[in-house]
Image (cartoon, rainbow, N blue to C red):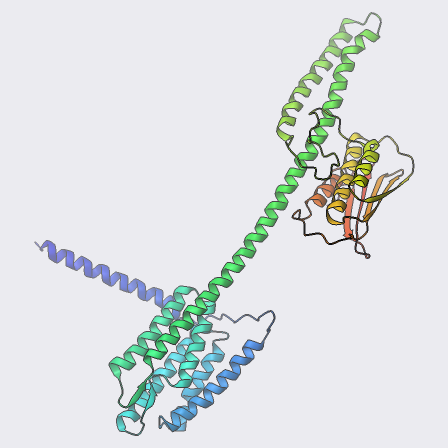
Length: 448
């Protein structure tokens, strides 16, 4: 039987070998690729960074060629391709950063080994080795461009391999009579990779913040829409509850208006009254859920829920004069223009018309203090037309956090009744709201 210690040691070796193979597979997947990852165009600078990098690549090529020839004693046929590869790596990094990193590393390795032969032969003296000045700058730029566009893990792997190659050339391979650049290269490469990863992380965080802000704004708009629909449903349920109460009372009184009513009539009227009471009870349960508490009314325009009784009647068109008087008292100069004779509108139309005018006046108070407001009400055969136009504000007001939710509620009210509403700034710097509500005696057309 094998010894326990031997079995444990064998298992440890296998586990270590398995981790090494897994790490090599990850390294191959991350760094052995030709995929394109173009450097994005900057909003303000546009293509200026690309042009600067191309000029830098040209300078690296010319400078490195001269250094490899003059100081490294390499022939032009070898020095120029190495310099072109190092300068070309910077240009290639604009589109394919990982292949550019391989190209820069391979060119540096080839140049270092070629110059080492000259140093060993005594032809070159005091050469910056293993990294030339141009090669160091080129690889520094390539590492920065790579770290800006690849995940942090890939950038760290590229940095580690660059440092490993530098260490092996400087301390294991070695060369006589050279000025070592390993320490400087390690420091600069680490700074470049860290800076690139930090900038990339900042860009991703900013993009994520933008996405979350968009999602939050959409959720806020959706929640506002649902709340406004609940408010509309609450008000309309109040109206329905009022009508059901009237039906119940009329059914109760009707038998006393007829001499000697039959038992069948009494039973039918009693059934009508009981059904109305049951429906009224259910409506009150619904109203208990839909009715909001402590709704704010900063301008005293009579928002529902501000101290009024739960069963108070909903405001109709006949209360517009009181609403406009309150608005004038709050500091706006309001002029009204009413045309046509008001027909008997359905309760929902009058309620929605009141709320639209109320919200438009509130917006004028909030966003255009001291302005002049014109309220136009027109009655015709087709329905009710409303217009509220305010002039520019007399003084600057801070931005309001409402984000257009009042306009959303007004538009929802008009659409619910088959009408439509538009809201837009005027050429003079004010704001105009126009709405049409059909009379309700014809099937409504739903507008998107």
